Length: 274
Ligand code: ATP
Ligand code: ATP
Ligand code: MG
Ligand code: MG
Ligand code: MG
Ligand code: MG
Image 1 (cartoon, rainbow, N blue to C red):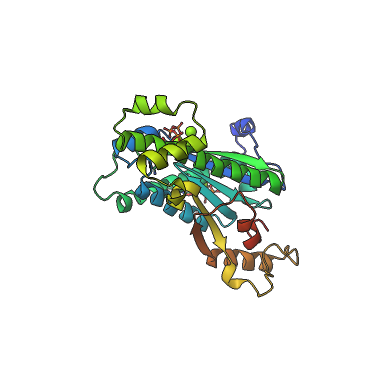
Image 2 (image 1 turned 90 degrees about the vertical axis):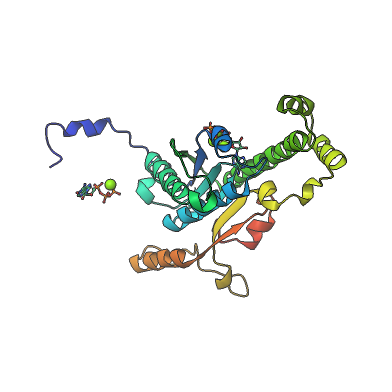
């Protein structure tokens, strides 16, 4: 069937597998969300409904892609971490990125009305781009996640200060932007506290830390913290693989707004990158 005179065109396709034994990150990001925020009147600096929608879509992606061990989201972006051993789509970058981005997009649009019952979606509907990055070591993957969470913190501190100046202080957006030029974190903390009575550290964790989504096996952990995930024993047998898959499907999907830069999260959930 495929062996027609036309079949040779297949050879023009790029075979784009990501290198073995690398952690694969698929990061999706909303297209033109600056505009979308205005169109649907998102609350500034943070619209909780929009974040909850992002998180619900991400949780669904985790349950659909069993090889995703953890996801981290903030603003209009989400990073999905595929286990270093994943064989999904022969690890092809284009297949992974497009499948995750479209699954996320579909979920985001289908759930929109739950989050915004009074503003039905209009065309152009929200879409998300997706890209893959392969990280060869756990340490580099950890640094990737730290980078995204640090970005969340920096943006949120800036946005919280900026919008306080505009919404509470009556400054124009241009004035607020000017006033914040060249300021460092401690300046912003000080402005928030002295002018608006806001202690930044008391702002909701979801805004300051973003959201971590992972398959949680905590309830299954033995008293000594031993656990079956990642054990090399008999992993090649088909029944064992099937069992593993079933276990992942049944695992609870946890959503938390916690620090993932320090060691605590990883020490208390060692199996996540196991
Ligand atoms: P691009 O298509 O290049 O990604 P963009 O307009 O989406 O362009 P981003 O850099 O992704 O640009 O920025 C997303 C914008 O959406 C930021 O301004 C961010 O503050 C805003 N945003 C995202 N989520 C929320 C939210 N829950 N509440 C308020 N604003 C949000
Ligand atoms: P993969 O995820 O690898 O793409 P797949 O099951 O989607 O797996 P394809 O090779 O893409 O496999 O084949 C698509 C299947 O869907 C074919 O069996 C095709 O006949 C069927 N199909 C697609 N569109 C229609 C349609 N409009 N009516 C009937 N069958 C359809
Ligand atoms: Mg962008
Ligand atoms: Mg965007
Ligand atoms: Mg973004
Ligand atoms: Mg198909």
